Length: 207
Image 1 (cartoon, rainbow, N blue to C red):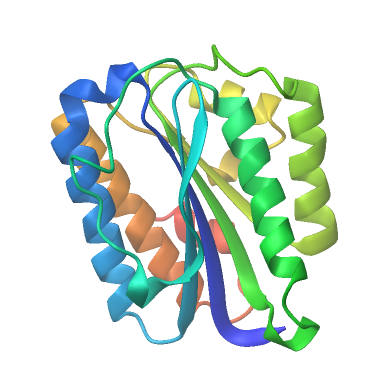
Image 2 (spheres, rainbow, N blue to C red; image 1 turned 90 degrees about the horizontal axis):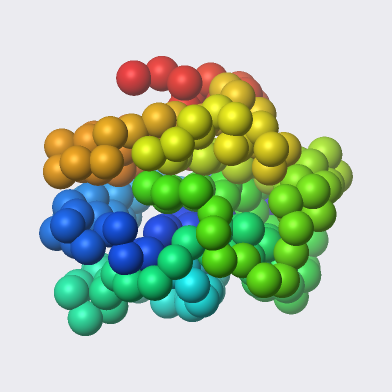
């Protein structure tokens, strides 16, 4: 695998409940993007957004070429197809990685999941099947999954998906809470990218 290369798959909720926080999500993600662009080392980004349906903004794009979000590219509405979104993120990331030679694949693969509500719209995968997928990627390929949730018991939700409790964060679903959540994700990602063999979860558990 290629040293100092991290791939980030970011899964972002854009269901209708996010409408009051559009500016905060856009600002938070764009600040995350700026932080990661300044960090030395190679990074690529896949951005998956979901409401009732799942859509992709970019796939394994060089971080320096990823365009910021705007009010035309982040428009909330609809339900919360969380399970479908995470499943599709895993499938797309896996397909993209398989196109790379072994020595060109990233040293670290991070899947970041942010949602302000509970699952209510998925049609294509069950909770148990998704949990099995996540565990497979963690155990066989050493992928890292981070779950950040609001308006729910994030630890119980993440546990039902097979995500370790030390990779879970709660946030308050208001302007400050949303901005703080994106800041925490960015800082954790920077620490993870800089780490040399340390457990990635140690970096997301720090404030």
